[in-house]
Amino acid sequence: DTAVSQTPKYLVTQMGNDKSIKCEQNLGHDTMYWYKQDSKKFLKIMFSYNNKELIINETVPNRFSPKSPDKAHLNLHINSLELGDSAVYFCASSQDTANTGELFFGEGSRLTVL
Amino acid sequence: QKEVEQDPGPLSVPEGAIVSLNCTYSNSAFQYFMWYRQYSRKGPELLMYTYSSGNKEDGRFTAQVDKSSKYISLFIRDSQPSDSATYLCASLRSNDYKLSFGAGTTVTVRA
Image (cartoon, each protein chain N blue to C red):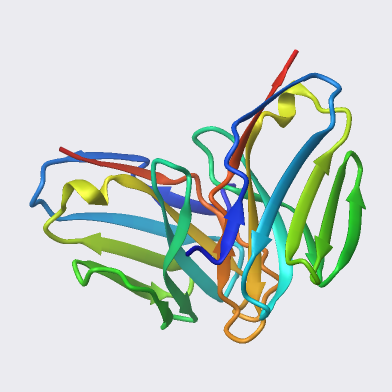
């Protein structure tokens, strides 16, 4: 059973399109995250939700909108895609916000914008 | 300036060598320090974490933190080809529990 699963694994789309990535965790964790990893492997937090409530919202264009329907799911919708959005997007979860830094990551969703 | 700076690599070592990976950080609020390992086309996974200054050993892996110099290190002894991966250091701030990652060092262990 995959602990943190995200779909789709690969996305290839044209500039200007809208796309969504879905994430689910079956670990019973309270906190979920979206990270963006660029081509140089730098991993940067985008959003964090604790029990469906947004707690971290980094400087991310408002074309990116996260949604957490329940604490086991965190989706990411991206409007008007741009070339610079090409990256690997990782979903992660942790037991709670006051954690020791142990995050469980999904396998990533590789987005290519043409 | 990134809050956690990591030696960029890449590193290529022969099997059996000691691998030494280093990071520095700038924020004194960091209290927990982690090393994540990321295999190609996979998500990062936690390898080790330490709280405050000191050493922690787990098998062939040793993590060191020196808070006075804001330095984080990971040593891999008797390296194996299966250790070939990208290693990411990370630090957790105690005030808002935000995790900051270094840029990662890609290590290749040659058989």
